[in-house]
Amino acid sequence: AHENRGLQSQLPPEEQNYGATAAHVRQRPFVSVSRNGPAKRDYLIAAVLCYGNLINFMDWFIVPGTLIDIQKYFKLSDGGTGLLQTVFILCYMLAAPIFGYLGDRYNRKIILGAGIFFWSVVTLGSSFISESHYWIFFLSRGLVGIGTASCSTIAPTIIADLFEEGRRTTMLSIFYIFIPVGSGLGYVLAAGMADVTGDWHWAFRITPCMGGLALVLLILLVPHRTQRRTAAHRALSISGTIRVAAERPDVHRTAKTTWCQDVISLAKNRSFVWSSLGLTAMAFVTGALGMWVPLFLYRAQVVQGIVPPCLQESCNSSNSIIFGGITIGTGILGVIAGAEAARRLRKINNKADPLICATSMCISALCLYIALMVAQMNILSTFIFIAFGELFLSVNWAVVTDILLYVVTPRQQSTAIALQILVSHLLGDASSPYLIGIISNAIQAKNAHSFQWNFWSMQYSFIVCAFVGVFGGGFFLLTSFYIEEDRKEAEQ
Image (cartoon, rainbow, N blue to C red; front, top):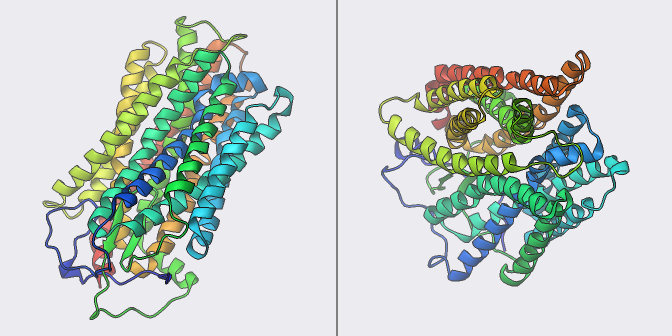
């Protein structure tokens, strides 16, 4: 099959809608492809890929779901514990572009299958590592991050090639909704298996079995070669929203530019720069919450006398189960609410998108700060404010991606997305778990060892997230000053 290279031109400004969440706009015919509509098998293939994405993100959050047990088993400090997730995300971040490159040039089914098999075997093997070989466990998490990158980068492109424009948007949205669902189920699975078996290692033996099922389904239901049929431009993002535009015969491509020229141009795009920094702040807070909240709540309960200190037996993991449920609910609700709010408010304010992001970031930061302050007094209130904090964070995922897609010209969007993903991961969720951990270590080192100071050290280090959230709101507010100008320039 012919490989489509590069991005295609967009519709003229007067005929296009901006933002993937906008609706009820005048439609123009898109470039047709020789298909009569998706067959049932296409939906089966998409279902297999969605299942793969589900277990992919379940595996991301098995470690946070059993963090207390893992920290006790390997005798890790808070800094060393945070490094586990940092290693995972760094390896994932570095491997994703490589899989993207391979997926554009070689058989995607083989690459995807190899990735699923690899991370499943490594995850299973990590459940047999003894406490004296903690460095092998760190290495295994990095290798799992490499394997999971295959699904995140390749599966969306297969779905995009199976469906035409209207259905493509829907199917990709369904695919990406499994990110919060899988993340939450990762906590629930890890904590549940630890409770049932009394051994946290079993949590690392379930997802490999699910990965084996995904591999069998991939072999049986996904064709060896999926034709790369799409003639339309598409831009995929980490949040899962997409933008599609057709290439018309009367629209000519602009002159080619080098990668360095594109980067310099993007650096001058103030809306892109400020919104990318805002996204980085979001990723920072999300990464820290995902890693540390169950452990933080456990230490608060110990200080209150609700649960006994976990010294020998398997630790109480109810916090992970509850937090997993919160992650699922707030993730789905937040993305839907953010998309709908953007659709409605754009009708009355052209700066609605960055203002929504700025407002939700500041509200989220406030909710998280209140959650930290009341944790020593009331756990229920802490859960409630954490839920609201996560909800307002989730509001932004779809909206911030839309900002990139209409302030950056089509020929630079792939580079822009790649840079945004790199920066947001590197300075965001790859850094925050380790940073929170080493701050907690530093506070503990200066004070007497006690359960009270174990809690306070985590509480004080977590306050960094509230301040980063406020800075993120400020970055989005700065975006609103330039967004109209940059959008008009991108449409020219």
